[in-house]
Structure formats: C-alpha cells, structure tokens
Length: 456
Image (cartoon, rainbow, N blue to C red; front, side):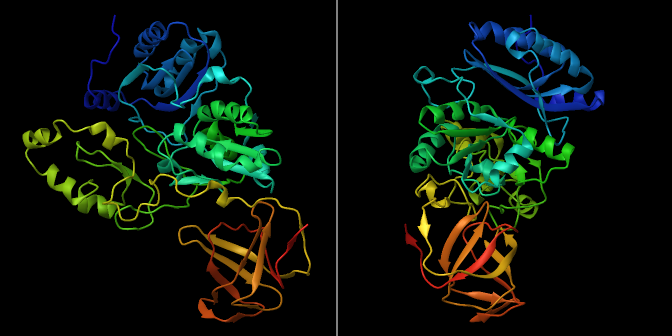
C-alpha cells in the first residue's frame, strides 16, 4: 500500500506533459473534529494518489487545509472522495483564476498540530461563533461604508503585490503575528466600527473572525471564500473589482493576476514589478520580487554573494550549506539587506490605527468651500490628482479630502503641481497633483477650510 511519492518533481512534470490532459488548481478547507488525523491522512493519500491528484495538504484534529492540482476529467471522482466524509459533503472548491498544469508536482499530506498556525488556544473561545460571511457585491458595498475598517490577514509578501483598496496590511511574516497586533491597535474601534476581514481562500478569517468577536468586536464580517472566490464572482457577475494587483498563491505560480495594476516594485532595481522568485542559491532560497532584467543579470539570485556561490562546484556548495539553518532563511521572505527596494518585511514599528480616520463628532465653526474632485491616485508614487472646479488653491491652504470610503482627511497643502509644473496657486480648470500618503477615490471631493474644526 503506497503512502508516499515514488516520482521526483521532474519525472512527474514529464508525465503530465506526455499525458496532455488539462489539470485544475484548486483549494479548500474545513474545520471539523478528526479523531485520528494519521488514519485520515493515509486514507486521503490512497484515494488521491489513484486519481493522480497532487498538492500540499495539512490535516489535524481540527480539520483539513488543502491546495491541490487535479486532472479536470477526474474532478467528479475527486469530489466523491470528499463526500465520503460528512464534514466535507458539498464543500466549496475554490478553483484558481489562472491554471498551470505544473502548479503542484507531488502529493504531500502532512499531519500537523493545526491546519493554520494561529498560536491561539481554541479552548479559550467559541471557534464556531464566526463573523458574517459576505459575497463579492456585499463585500464591495461594505467597503464603501465610512464606518468600515478592512484588514488584510495575509503576510507582508502577499499583500505587497495586491490588496483591497483602503485595507490595513500588517507588515508581518505569518498569521500568528498579525492577530495580537491588530487586536491591540484597533481597541478604540470595537463598538462603533465594522471590522471587515479577508485572506486568500477564507481559512484564516474563519478563525480570526471568531477570535475578534471573542475580543469584544461587535460587528465582524469576512469575505466568503477569500480573494479566490471573490475574483470568480466579480468576473461571472460583472462586478467592479475593489482588489488591485495580484493575488499571491502558494504553488508553483506564486501569483494570480486580478487587475492590471502593478503596485509593487523589483526589490533589486525598483522597476514596477510584482513577480516573485526564489533565490537560486539553495542555501538561501529567499522569496523576493525580481524583474526579468534583474533575473537575467543576477541569474535568479538575490545578491552578488548568492550569485558567486551558485557558480561554485556543487560539492563546495553543499559544504557551504552544511550546518546552516536553511529553513530560517527560506521563511524570511523578502527580508535581506541586499534588497534595496523592498517595501515590506520589517517587523511592525508603527500603529496600524494610523491608517484609520477615527470617527470623532465635530462642530465645524466655518464653512468649507468645494474646490475640486479626485481624478486619479498613482499608487506606486503616492500622488493624488484632482481637477480644480471652483475658486483657487494655494500652498499653505488648509484642506479637507472627503469621501464615503476615504472618510475625512484634513491637512495643509505644502506643494502643488498644476498641469505638470510647480506653482504657488492653482486656478479653476487646472489639473493638480500632490503627494498624499493615503489613497483617494473618484468619489472624493477636495475642500478648502478657513480653520480647524473643534470637538463637540
């Protein structure tokens, strides 16, 4: 009875090419009480190996978490292997946006303590008391609510290449780190804000939503099926995408294109890029963003040191790797002093709540004057573009940007570019640009105010 792989990844890839059959990359998860995870694991391996199903699967006493590649003509037979278990009857399979026959080249099923490393004591709260599930259109609607705080529960290297508009993206390496950080930073918003969360396929939010309800958050929502299911729904139903960029995935592809926006840059040269690669030095294998030009020049390496090592004879490379804690380097994704243009990877050192406009009741002592409307926001350079429709705007003016998602942001103009040139005063009809640390939307308006507001 075979309970392990007998083919190498290279041999499996050759067989897949020779078969010439379409394969589907998909994912699913289920929380359930599994008495004997080892027995469950072996049953799945036997059933799935017979169908040539491949993937990376974790099973534990609390359930199953799977990312897989299945022959398209075996999909129904694969569903039948799931239906054997009551807790997986009718389970949703999140089918990938982009398909790649080589997304997985081995069938790896591991028994773990948990299917997601969350660091939580499940006995301390009700894990079944989860947040409200939202479909794509419902999620979009709630994003427009000014009382909504949206949080990305993925890791820094995932959110760096794509995320929802206006989302808080914690600069953390793993899910376990994000929970206490977010809980601490959002303490002031438990009662009056809607906490809206999302992740890749929904599994992290299943646990996180219950955890935050236990922590006292009154209004907790989660994106049903995560970014993968959201993308399927917006494409099938013609819904505008509020997700910008790429969705990071944990298989050979390393990403699925959701929109044409490129919001990250090559970690080596700074050119707009959102393609991840792993360093070719097996003693490093660092995950980072690398453009095609740097990939060619650096031969898939993250640094000149690693490049030099890959040119050594294999025997010397193996000697250099001896005794190194290779795993620690592999999982330090995007963290290296050699990467000059990385935008993430440092541990959090600033409050998350900085990105949130706290809803304080205010009494406006003077009338605000509408100046113009938003036209664009350049994500990479953090430049806002507005059209002046009324009056004038000068450097030193106190202004307010207001919108249903942006909320109300007040600041002083320190510089203005009108029609591409720096100026002291912009006039009606001018197209102006200026640096802005937060994203603006087409629904946002620009106002000039005479003085600050006073707390009521």
